[in-house]
Image (spheres, one colour):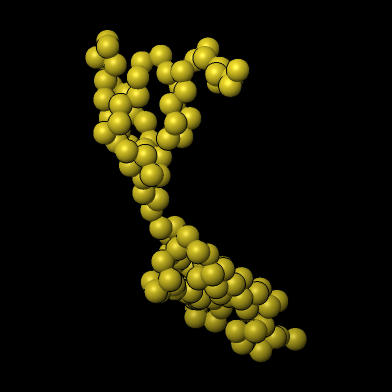
Amino acid sequence: MSIPLTIESLSGGGAVERLHGALQEALQNILDPNTTAKKPRKVKLEIVIKPNEHRNMAEMTVTTSCTLCPPTPLETSIIIDKDRDGTAKASELAPGENPGQAVLPGTMNAGNVTQFPGKEKASNA
């Protein structure tokens, strides 16, 4: 007994299951705050039918695919300089940091406050 050919019956329901999975993947991508909101997403269901020479049978392939929106690029600012040996060095500019403020050699930069190593706060004595 043959099964009537419908999208729902293809591969025992596997075609519809994969289409739903691809649709769910596109919807998740839309909800991702790291992607652009207004770019379109595409969900495809492709059916390829390859008949035999006698045209009485065919092999069928069902494929689903998604074209999703990639994550939005992350942007940051870096300061580029060279050390005493001439080797290039770079560091990320922290938010609110002034790129014109030089960090003194031998110091540790903790945010916007430069602390000198080995020096403790003076007590009010």
